[in-house]
Length: 303
Image: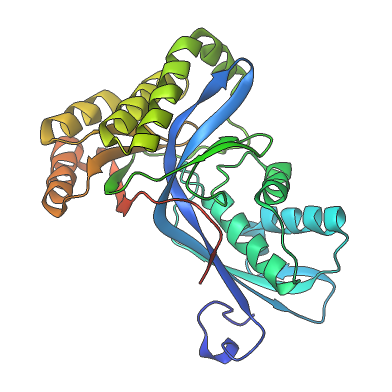
């Protein structure tokens, strides 16, 4: 299969390209009044998809064993919207897998958006979310801005502005977590017990995003990450939070069903380098720095 994303051989052909962002976990996640939700945390790291029509029926994809959810989602789209699909898809992504960085959601979003364009079809954000969540729980990075969503059903509660000038140093604590097999029953019992704190974190997060108050955003994210320690504990959390605060960072967020923590800080090159050095000095080989990214608004983007 040709490289549908960057090969010069395909640039003159009817290839559609799209991209979608990763996340550094979530700003807040929990359950209030029986409604599960998250507030996502998109970053400027992307999955890219290339799609073009082909002669064969259905959808073909390179390395299909790695991207079975795309085929499943394309079939949901075909059945729901009565499409005829004769397409091949290629994915390129540097987003780490199984870490809570929305790698699968980004793959799905990029591929399905390119497929929609190739089929000359427009889906609303809500319709798009329904396709995604028919396959798996989703961070819904296709919604613009910072999205407060029902990640199990795909409903958008509110789209909020991304915090200007906020970056995140992504720290991987090791291992992998499968979003689908995440123990939601145990999480639900803890969310019920911690509902007042979750409610406070969500209120402060939304207030901070509306006002552009990065300290409020980071405080709310840290509170949610502390609650998550009761569900999916990361042994490095307390030491990382202490290290971050000592260096002047704003706080720490987490992947609530993943392995990464994020050191949130005001955009400053010297501070970013200081934080990376401090993390390496404190933890050595005990963690891996996945990268340093700008926090952005989500969306479906052309390449």
